[in-house]
Image 1 (spheres, rainbow, N blue to C red):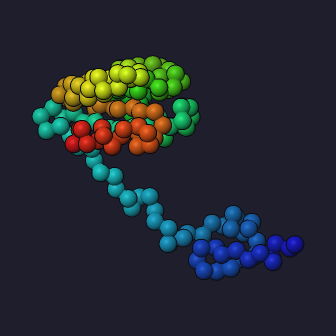
Image 2: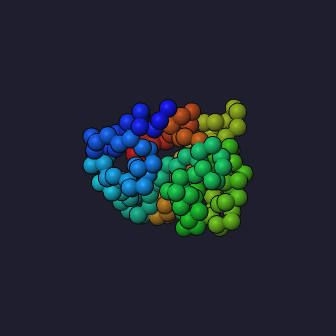
Image 3: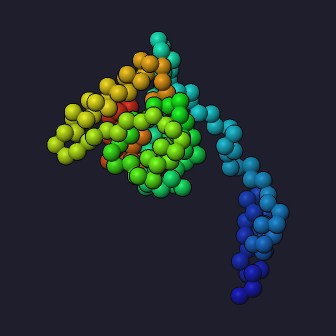
Length: 155
């Protein structure tokens, strides 16, 4: 078939006959929100110490798959990281190379509650000391990761 038998919509309600014409001269689509229009909420700051906490997911384990924000947070040596035991060795190596101070939560079968209490205490200690505490969890913190429970604990 000829390309002209498959008309394309260029986003402005106009038909075009060739996909290559949309690649050579991109059109601005005013219906798509621009990222600059969205504002992120600033982190809550501890009223006395100035400390704050950020919950971060490490994704599937490869450093190349981290978001830019996650990479920036976990390689900043001024942050205190509280890391799940199952965070990949490659990501821990990235943190080591950046000189980041971190503590590894020793959650093993049968001692999850004691380990979770230890995590909360480490985070509270970091907050009291005015640190930016980064709670690094494996994968997506809200899928099988108790992320909701930790958010509620620190509110």
